Image (cartoon, rainbow, N blue to C red):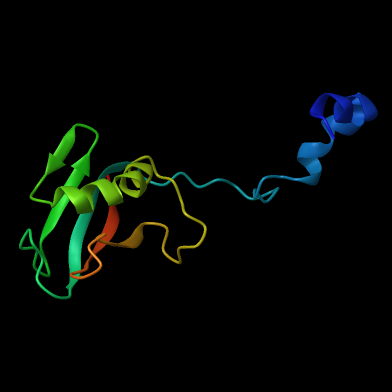
Length: 124
């Protein structure tokens, strides 16, 4: 059905009630608790299998801020994790994570995978 035709079939009152029917995941009545602002995202190597061409070792880390990157990271791993890291920098919560402040990310090199833990660094 074309959107314009759909809107014509419903009254204005019915269209106004749609947000009440589908509250977009928000629970009515609960207070929103403001968490401390995310100031950076830190990625730490938690697993290396094979030989990483960049030489990453378990424990290596780098930090992503709004102004740039501090630390050493393979460009391929960086490009693959940047969308998630950038979203986390702006405090996006992925619904499939058990801890909203941490996620894992694997390097795209299937023969020598490096697994990173990406964590939000909040203001103190």
